[in-house]
Image 1 (cartoon, rainbow, N blue to C red):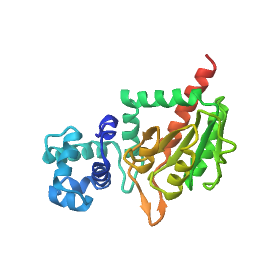
Image 2: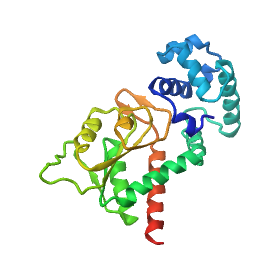
Image 3: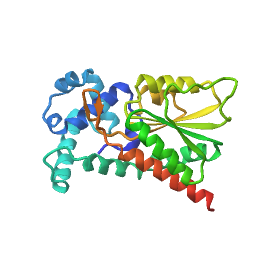
Image 4: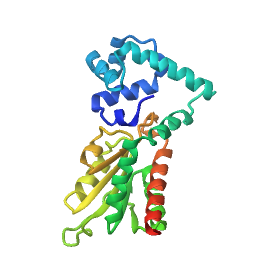
Length: 247
């Protein structure tokens, strides 16, 4: 329903509206604009700008589109509880766009030239960092995971020029993640952020950001947001690297 190209244009406030809408689609269908603005902690003008950026002539048309989209999904997916296949289907529709493929090409060009790739993430992101490093190593690229967020980078022994650091973070706001990026920033490295929001602090610090825009599912401090898009991106770029190595 919301194209990848359009989602990339959202600022932080509009991203907050998007996150609320995709989590409460059914409620938003009948929700007055003032109520949505209140729940998303934004102004009504911001809601209208969001609707226009998504390609709709006003809030009423956005609500109608949500209703039609939900009916279409309901016909295809019969589920009584949260079903990650619905947002994942939307994600895989987005990745077929020209803009998304251009982003992957840019990432591939950066990684291909790198003498070394380092993967970094916390929590489940750390497990994915290990997987990513192994998968890309299998594809012929020297890649290593960083296990310790407090890993020192002595100035007397700098990283190889052109090293790529792939940072995995759902929110893109975790203090340790931002501190790690700021620590390696003085090095001659390229930062690729793989995160859920293109408007996060991590995205702003990165040289290239690949955002996957999944509904964020959190319980207290635990994050259950699906990481299938991250695995897909790791494997997609890994297979492309393997193809280049065997040309």
